[in-house]
Length: 282
Ligand code: SAH
Image 1 (cartoon, rainbow, N blue to C red):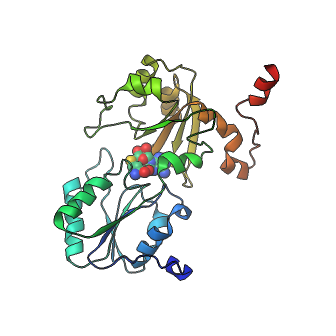
Image 2: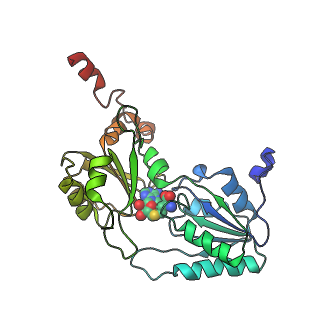
Image 3: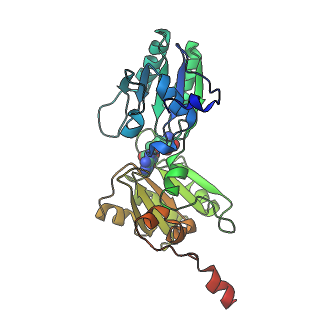
């Protein structure tokens, strides 16, 4: 199959002068949407971020220009207004522009800002959602973000603000009290400070935590630890970004749901929460 259009779905085409703000998913190219793949097969220019997997870029139409617009903490990188200006310029040059971002463009991806710059410039655009690391990436670690009877709410939080600090505009005590499952993006650097705030807000030190690095890539690493020990453990194990941190009892489900591990021979526990023991006991 050269293009998902061959499936007879009548997918919208990426037309000259248009920009598609597109999610590339967390890594595994199999997690691309058909619409994203269709855009990759049609784009003249793919403007991509640091977290976009190479295997995804390899799906671009042969001859498409690949432009790196990545931002990684600590390294010199294009400024956001420069990226937006570049997108506008390419569109005005009648290029078919695929703006490709890791995960979902509207989840901690500044997709809204770029889209508003296109609106201001009168450039037509489409949003192509992607699988966010905080949901699909954790699924690759066998961790569901909700589990019936366990949690009816989940909170997605960024671990650093635009200045690179722990976002203190957040009501951490309220998050600690109100959200049984907390999913943190960009949290590795400040994990100690964040864990301290949640502990101060009343979360127990023994609460399960998973750190999932390079989810859905060949280099995926999963560290299962506790709120009290997570920052130390992540450092000791040399866990490197990009990584998701998930806090809550759903982490325990990995014992039963680590389907990737099972492919490598891990035996899965059908009752990781020990519900059977509990019902027998009481
Ligand atoms: N728009 C993206 C998030 C961008 S913010 C999304 O929806 O997934 C960048 C942060 O995303 C990283 O610091 C990391 O916390 C997380 N992230 C992105 N890809 C990841 C991956 N493959 N594995 C683990 N974390 C990832």
